[in-house]
Amino acid sequence: MLEKIVRRIFGDGGSKQRQGRWNSKWSRDGFEPEWALDDVPDSIETAVGEGLIEPGAAVLDIGCGAGTTAQWLARRGFEVLGVDFSQAAIQRARKAHADVAGLSFDVVDVTQIGGLEGKFDFLLDRGCLHGIPKGKAQKAYAQNVTHWTKPGALFLLMSRCRDVSVDQLAEEMARLFGASFDLVSAKPCSMDGPHASRPIPGGVLHLMRK
Image (cartoon, rainbow, N blue to C red; front, side):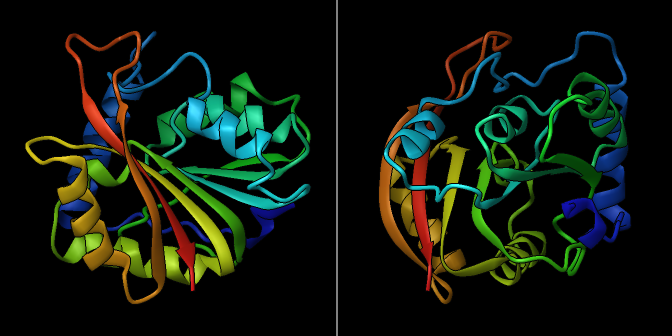
């Protein structure tokens, strides 16, 4: 099982403060981030339907939250590891999806170098990177993502656009990941879920590991 390759890393400083805030939020009954969905994103359904994820592929769901997307993928035959740096979120995910085969969850801070020793065929991030401060933390995230992927692996990244266009977001991500990934496509998407108080414009990017 994939949980055997996990080594927990919790970070310190600003990372630990963010972790504490998210633990507090996820500990509240009924909490869901404003970009969380009750179902899986259309881009994930499309990736599976079009065969972009090979049958039986090892999948990493970064910032998995309550595990909705991770369990959907596991039920379709993929070996899925969902990671989040909130212990409360992981506890909720484990409790909700304990009966799903091929699925595991663990606490990992993706802004700390290391954390996982496995290599994955498909990576998913919907709403994690856009909450990580630019600079050292995002560079560590990019280094980890590079280390965790096999050549040819697909990385599906969905992020809020904030005050930038999708093209500008794509340029930022190309600079962040360009040494190890090719940007295949970038399209606008909605990042708001049923708990959002306002529309959240975003972008969905496909990156391919070199």
